[in-house]
Image (tube, rainbow, N blue to C red; front, side):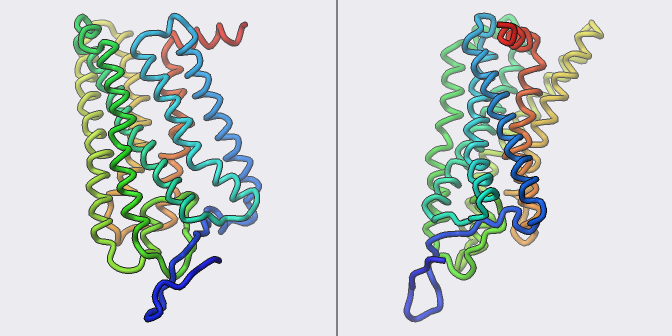
Length: 313
């Protein structure tokens, strides 16, 4: 472990690298986990990549709804690529060291992509609400310029905030053990090896989590509650069943993603369990990106037809 002395008066040392323990406590399952996560990563890349390509190539999928889906699929590829390749390398090589710069870079990208996903999910829920609530005015309200602005805002709003959040964490002094009981550099486990008071940083985590996780989650719930109330008024039982099927699948992945993120970042620090945080992180960083292509895209008949045409070529 590379260390250099920080203060001659004290026993504090400035850590130059961390050790991401990941799933080191399960040595007999290392190659099984490597194979499992590699398969999951390939599935995520192929499914989201395919959806991104067909929404760009197929003339039928040029509506604004599929513009959101294309951005969402590209985001999922970016999000999972911020964590899974490093985790696969750590499991495969059993060298779990990561420099402070690499750790800070990974944390920054995970926070940016995670915040973008929260905002983009809220935008997509609002888009579906407008399409169902006022279909006649939908093309006017959700025109191309508005949609580009919403997507651009989702991608860019969080960048300065998350960069500032990362800078705040890594400007603190680290000391003691350099072992992080996690599979990627996340704020809660990193703060546990900080020397001194972290109450200000904890407060910033809560504030950012409320703005980028809780507020979009409540907006999504509000949009879907309105959508469900509209579906209940539909005269056709078939339309009602189809609407409920789509909404329930969307809500399922929303609750899975936001629920695990809210528990991780908004529960009191005294109740943080390293193993619980690690398991919850698997849900919002790996499992939901794997399920999202099926739930958000393959339920649309146009996407299925475009996929069939692509496979038949």
